[in-house]
Amino acid sequence: MSKIKICGLTRMEDIEAVNTALPDYIGFVFAPSRRRVSFVQAAGMKERLDGRIKAVGVFVNEEVYVIANLYKRGVIDIAQLHGGENNQYIERLKKCCDCPIIKAVSVQKHGDAQVCTRADYLLLDHKGGGTGEVFDWSLIGGVKTPYFLAGGLNTANIPAAVSTLAPYCIDVSSGAETDGLKDSERIAEIVRLVREEN
Image 1 (tube, rainbow, N blue to C red):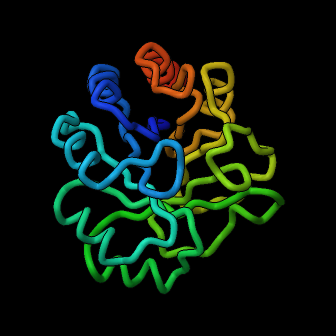
Image 2: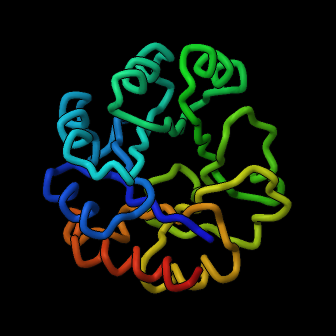
Image 3: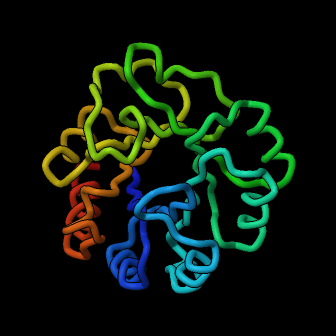
């Protein structure tokens, strides 16, 4: 049964929308991005977030102590790593705190998704991530680590993604937006589609 994550929340209106739709996860982007939020903004939004929804912090080559501090303060429940973080980095983070870890992988060719990682989950995405583009799903095969599927997912292709790949989680960002902002109706529709396909 695939779960659903709505990534890139930036406003209190976004929190209200997900509290109504109840996806399993949401994402706060702390890395350089048009969706980037400050730690203070994220803390304020997390206070308003329904307790049934887990908050994922998105980072690129962040200092371990920064992530550990956000986790210990309850601002994030999971760390999503998009940079050059290797297994030694992941092990250091796990020693600092019990934070579950998602490691993003750019899928460009066969074998890319079969990485050996100490992370709890993978996030399989288009090259570079955050592009809103779908990668070739046929390149996924033999993945042993539970994975989040990202990259250009929207109401048109989510049913096929869930029914054919059955990923651990569907991860949507731009597909839940209108004019660059999260859209409550799109969020509700995406959550409904994933739940129906399970």
